[in-house]
Each structure stands twice: as structure tokens, then as C-alpha cells.
Amino acid sequence: MAVFINISTSLDGYVAGPDPTLEEPLGQGGEQLHEWIFPLAAWREPHGLSGGETGPEDDLVRESVARTGAVIMGRRMFSGGSGPWESDPNAEAWWGDDPPFHVPVFVLTHHEREPVQKEGGTTFTFVTDGFESALEQARAAAGDQDVAIAGGGEVAQQALRAGVVHDVTLHLAPVLLGGGASLFGDVRTNLKLRLTNVLEGAHATHLQYDVER
Amino acid sequence: MAVFINISTSLDGYVAGPDPTLEEPLGQGGEQLHEWIFPLAAWREPHGLSGGETGPEDDLVRESVARTGAVIMGRRMFSGGSGPWESDPNAEAWWGDDPPFHVPVFVLTHHEREPVQKEGGTTFTFVTDGFESALEQARAAAGDQDVAIAGGGEVAQQALRAGVVHDVTLHLAPVLLGGGASLFGDVRTNLKLRLTNVLEGAHATHLQYDVER
Image (cartoon, rainbow over all chains, first blue to last red; front, top):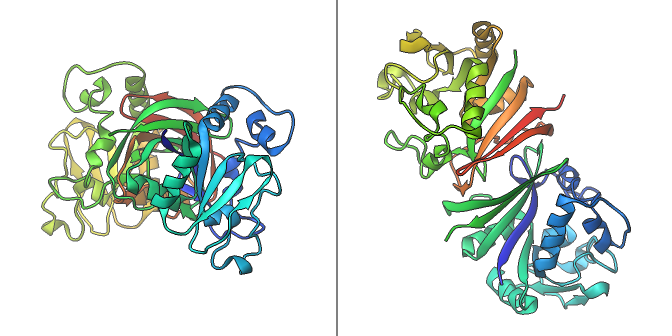
């Protein structure tokens, strides 16, 4: 059972651009970070779409999906909102009735909320007592599989600070956003990693690293 | 004649670590960014050393050296200092009598100083009237060859803001420094690039991009 970060980032280290809105949840230019994944069969399938590209990038996504037994994400990735749920216009999140995760998802938030069960095996559990608690619950839910840290940057930073990250997959989009949500922030770890795989795609370079212990 | 950025960076986008000193000019952990280059014959040669590794990484460095007709760098890269030259304990820079550049180097500074001629073809010209002026002089000096933006981050950002960068070579070291000198800072360009080459090395991943126009 490993904890891994799996996230798309700009060349200047942002997982979302500046000024996110409900219409543009990834901020100015942020959609470009994910361009690489939309054509892939492995992305289309869990979104209920047929067809799509196969090949090495598709394989990479499939491997990541196959190892994922639970997901941890931040509140902002879930809904784009903050504050009490009653006043969050996107409290039901971006993904409709059948979200693409199909595993238990643990959402870090400061605001309590009952768990939500969606179709297709996705459950959203809202964790208000911190990253360690979310991790413990995600580990239990994942069983023999791994726990994916999906984003945003703040959650990835909490995982890095906690020293629990086994490996990191970065999907490096060839764009400078110049602001927004920083992936690594100021995590003062002096953390060393070891490159295990590079894959060149049309819209992103995929870099996989093991964290050195 | 093209302008290109050629720089080593951490995975979290720092070209030097926090708290640089004269003893540790690249800041805490910053030396790790350059580990990849020290074993290479193409690095040892211009430093007056024999031997060293050959192969694809060595070729990459040789190509970069071959195209470089002039270099632009910041004052901090030059000496680590700031303020008047009289009070800069490293005013003669890091590289001794025969610096490894062997071409004209233009140093951006706020403090006037006569040019310095070193052995082996390296000259240091101190430019106090801004990046555009440094670029004009470097272009003239480079002739048919290209102008390399060597660092630090602030100079790279000025070049990006000026819209003059043709291509970018990043040597991505697998380390998180968590602070220091940021490569891209907050350049708000929404700049798109196109990956032209990926090379996996033992201590860095080399990514080459063309800036899209």
C-alpha cells in the first residue's frame, strides 16, 4: 500500500491558473494542463464515453487507475468553493451522478458534511480533522491498493510534509501560467527523488519519480 | 540568431536554494541542481580539466556551447553579491582567471563598472541600463551565433517578459528545494511552449522547448 501523488502541472509549477471561477474552475489557462488526458480512452471510459486514443499515455493512465484504491483531494478540487456547504453553489461537485473515480474519495474540508454515495462506486467522505485522518481512512478503504493524492497543491504539500509519499507522477504541460495554485508551494523538505520513467506525449511530458528514503 | 534560456532547476522551480552565502552560493541544497553536469567531458573541458563522461548528455552540453556566441547573466550569478562593487567580496566572480564561457558575457547590474577581460576569450561587460540594452549588446557580440540566458531566474523572467526567447532548455533535477530563487517567478505570459527533446540523465531530466509564437 503506497501513497502517490498524481497531478498535472504547468512548467512553472501551477496546478491551476490564476482567478478560478465556477465557469473556469482551473483558472486562467488552467484547462491547458489537462489537454493531454481528454483524448485518451482511459480517461473517456470512466467518464462514460466510448472510443479514444490508446498507446503509452493511455497505458500510463490505466496503470494509475488500476493501482488506485482510494483518493484524497482538497475541497477546492471537489467543488471550487470554500466556507459552509450551504452557500457553496457547486456543493455536488463537478462530476454529476457517476463521477469518474469509482473508489472512495476523501475530501479535506473545514466544514462537516455527511458522506455522499454516488453511482459507480464513488463515495465522497468529508474529513474535517486533518490530513493524517484522511490518510488513515483512505488507507483502510484502499485495502491492498494504493492511495492517490489527486490535488490540489495544498493537499500534495501536506502529504509531502507528512513524509508519506512513495512516488510522484507529474504530467508536465508545456505552458507557463504565471500564477495560481502552486503545486509544491514552500515545502521545505530538501526532498530527493529518483526518476523512474519519462514518457513524452503530444501535450505533456510524464515524469515519474520515487521519493528517496 | 536566437535567444535561449539554458538553466538547471529543481522540480519545484528553483534555480538556487534558500539562504545563499559566499561559501554556498547556490543556497541550501542548490549544488544538487548541477550534479548532472560535473562528470561530463563537455563541462570539464572549458574548465581546463581533462577526461569526463561522453554520451547523450555530453552531446547536449556541446550543442549548447557550440551555438552560444554571447551570454547574459545577472549580478547574483556573477558574484553572489549586490550593491557597490567596492564592497563586493567576490567582485572577481567565481571562475578565476580563465572562466568557462570563452565568449563575451553581459552582466546585468545596477552598479557601473569597467569591462573586465579574462583569459580564454571571456569578457565581462557590465550593463546598467537594463535587459534590452544587454540583449542588444549580446546580439551584436554573438554575430551569427545565439545568445544564452544563463541565469538567474530574474534575468530569465526579463527575457520571457520581453518576448524574445526562442527556446528553453531546462535541466530538471529530481529534488525539491522548497525555497530560494524562483526560475519563472510570476511571469504572467500564459506562454505556450512545444517540447522538442527529452533526455533522461542519471541526475537530471533535460527538457527542450521551443516557445510558440
